[in-house]
Image 1 (cartoon, protein in one colour):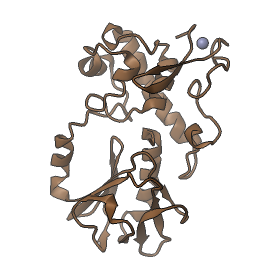
Image 2 (cartoon, rainbow, N blue to C red):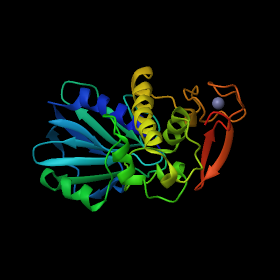
Image 3 (cartoon, rainbow, N blue to C red):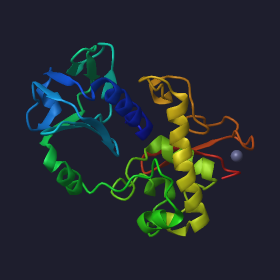
Length: 255
Ligand SMILES: [Zn+2]
């Protein structure tokens, strides 16, 4: 699953390539489309993001795209292309999806708000730093371990499995602590480090190809994917466990 930083990076690339241009669309696999009909072309006025959804906006219609597990946007044609963006005066851009799990909704732009309301997506913890009260209101009553609570997209939208491990390590909060037992100071730290983590990923990765460890690239993370390696803060071996079916990495000493 692409994490929030990857989707944001894709948004920035699409924005730079598509906004203020007439963009043609060539649909190669109709299974991509969940609602509406892909237009032959439209003039893109903005490319936005809501949690992990990308919005290609025009005056009349908006394309809402979720990459799901294996969808990927690329400037080079490779793999199984399901949709081609053809901006006027620029090179084409490809949506690849080897497992064909990506989803696209073509909606009247006036119906986009209702679409997200119906999906009960929580508010975003980024780019502004959210204070302790904001986190307490959304996750302060949750009984499950904080690592699992942070993935509740109906409460806080956009944090993925990797980000949850990294943010908790940065904030020195053990992942198995029940969310409702965290102090305001701990939520404050989670809020601050959520923004720091995502900002850093977006700063260090250049271009569209964010080489996440999950895809075999070099590992840019402090604890994620580093079981047994020394904690960058205290040198203790990083632990790995499974919470809610997903891998969690943490430092058993300084966290
Ligand atoms: Zn440590």
